[in-house]
Length: 327
Image 1: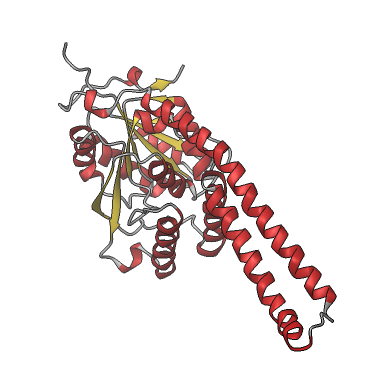
Image 2 (image 1 turned 120 degrees about the vertical axis):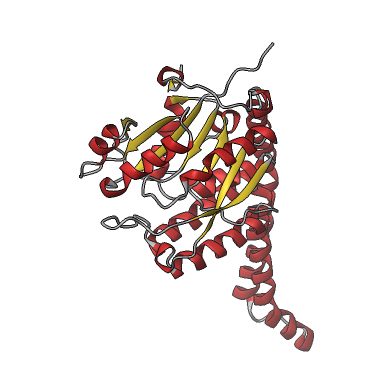
């Protein structure tokens, strides 16, 4: 029996991208003529929706501000076989989208990340470069393995990735959450270098280096607490016990010299901290079983859906009706 042609949806989250959205939509239409281009207007105050609609895109709205809110809504609403996620600001190279889609199908991958290669100084602020490198290292240490660009907004995703992804993010931490989801379930992932251009004149970046950086770090640590509780609480417990031992050094030193323990408050504090550290580590062990059960449930949900290998790698004709509201 012949394989069904894949339904491809291009999702473009937008907030005040009027100067760039037309060229972005046309670029993806040219690169993926069989795909449905869906622009999600995130409560813009300019003509982003009108311009996107005039360019031929389907336009939907998400009033709750934040890229994570947009992606969560899009993944719930849109029913497709392959999802291409990019920004509506024209910074990502639409011409490489067919190559990313073909790679996902040919190698039966669940995520292909377009890692950003920039040759224009204006494209990527120095603070963002440093922050991206730092968070890549943090995620690699926390989850055993990382990606070279966990914050890239250019991704091609399989249906089983999207429909098993419990999106909890509200803002720019969404890319880190998607990366961690793939790493946690050990999904097949590839990274392909793609050109990253400077923003179109008249548009500005919505990412605040320090504010959003702290939000992302907090979210990454939250995910580690949820998905790796033994590691998270074990580290806290060990740190507490080591601090208690440092406090206890003078107490032991005095006892060895005089045979007395004159610093009772310090001794009691150190003993209490050792007990607290052991208790925290024990909590991590208990929560590990719940975390493992949640992971197995997500894995079963992921495996219950068809893999990209079951799709027809030939170009597909996708009608507007084939990308619609799920359910």
